[in-house]
Image (cartoon, rainbow, N blue to C red; front, side, top):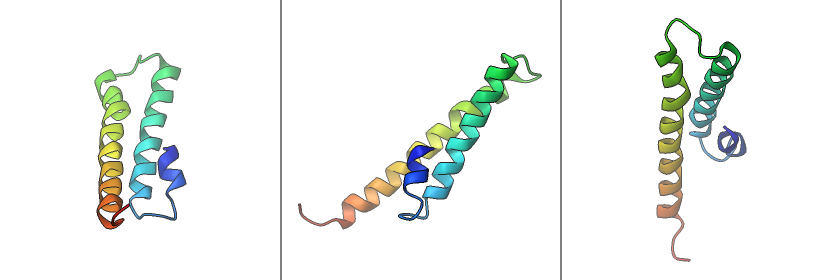
Length: 73
């Protein structure tokens, strides 16, 4: 979530990265508040974990694009 916020004006993929972080954080807070005592705890766990994987993949795409276009060091 923090990386998406920092990159807001630098890449268009910052919005999906930020959204993934927010979804994961919201699910984590909901799980903590309810003690995971919800109708479908597996769904809540997926909302905690899957956005992190998707956001990390998006960060990898941004980094790979920047490395490929930076030229020699």
